[in-house]
Length: 210
Image (tube, rainbow, N blue to C red; front, side, top):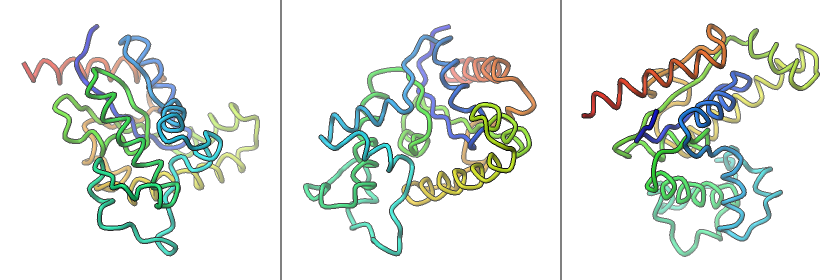
């Protein structure tokens, strides 16, 4: 199945969104970008990959820093970009990388405000993967070999961070269904069936474009 779409996947922590994206990319035979964006950002900016990993999908505190007027026009960074907090520099660098990669052809991007960055791309499809806390806690506890209580604490922590990051840098509230083309409850479907559903959705969307 060949596609011409660029796909952004936003996800709740523990929902399996990353795995859905990876399997979808494998089946569609298109590039998959998740943590690889950190490596590309480090290469482009010359900053430490380890430092960028610690900043990944974390917003600058509004109480410590007010973005300059040039920042909301993301994609047009000024020459003062490297005078910004590192988290803003990382975002703007990833912004440019995601836009460039999407212009090169079909691809799947996970997180990093890719739904916002690609919103004006003519072939963009945005997805949101979610599940109940119970399902997510079970998946996390098994994967990380931790207690259910620790898994629930991690869910609360990382979902808050992702929402704060998205709502700081992008327009549209993170996790609200009307801001995405398709939302999927991965707790109702397996990862494999979620991928199959998305493939069918992409096919219908691309058919409607012709």
